[in-house]
Length: 128
Image 1: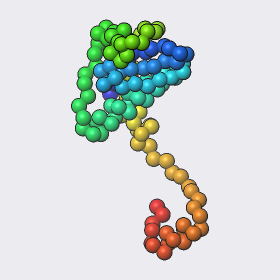
Image 2 (image 1 turned 180 degrees about the horizontal axis):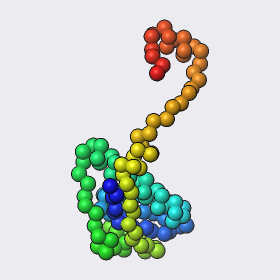
Image 3 (image 1 turned 45 degrees about the horizontal axis):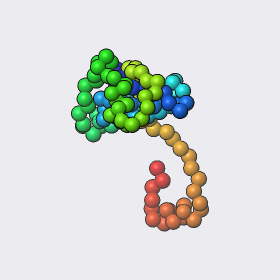
Image 4 (image 1 turned 135 degrees about the vertical axis):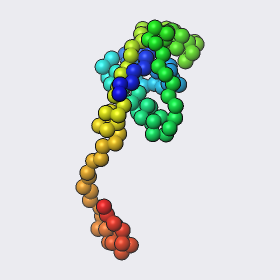
């Protein structure tokens, strides 16, 4: 199921900051718009997946027209000068993203020192 939340994108100092006002001002950033969008998708997926795993309630997303980047910027830092800003929807299929990035098992082969191997064998430690 696709989840969609509005995010404020702020361009300042040659990078984009991304803030999700509906999600306790969850934030990330990227050096380019594309990188910021990728980070926003990852951030949103991680937040929603964690909420689901923990059994926390997630607020409903606002309409994109109800979000003002100027108001969000003022709430975050009333003294900061306004930079280039806009609102964009960020979408992610949380279940598919979690399967691909958060829940995937990876097999690793590793080498340990001989003394550690001997000590583990003496303690009947299972290496699997």
